[in-house]
Amino acid sequence: METISVSKLKAQLSAELKRVQAGQVLTIVDHKHPVANLVPLGSEVLYTREAGEPYAFRELSPLVTGDPLEALGEERKDSW
Image (cartoon, rainbow, N blue to C red; front, side, top):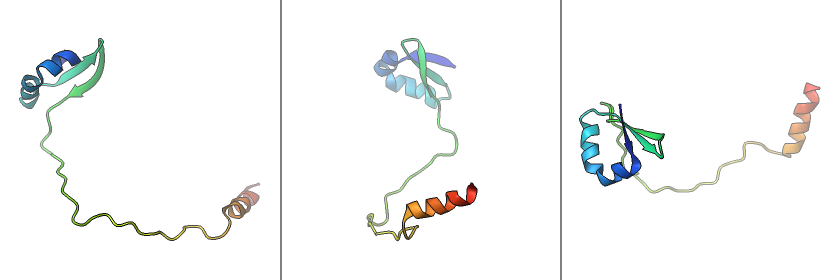
């Protein structure tokens, strides 16, 4: 595992990404403190896709009916 400073990574990003793609693991340091690891992707890549239909808001029915403070009082009364 090799370390690289943020400034050097910014200056040589393409070359460093090629090294990571070849299997090298880089630890990125900022002012001598490690902040991240740059590792090659494994064989399992996560793919995403566009939504099939736009998001539509719908009102949900409440989970609790009545006064929640009454329900809380009932629950606490049983535990004392």
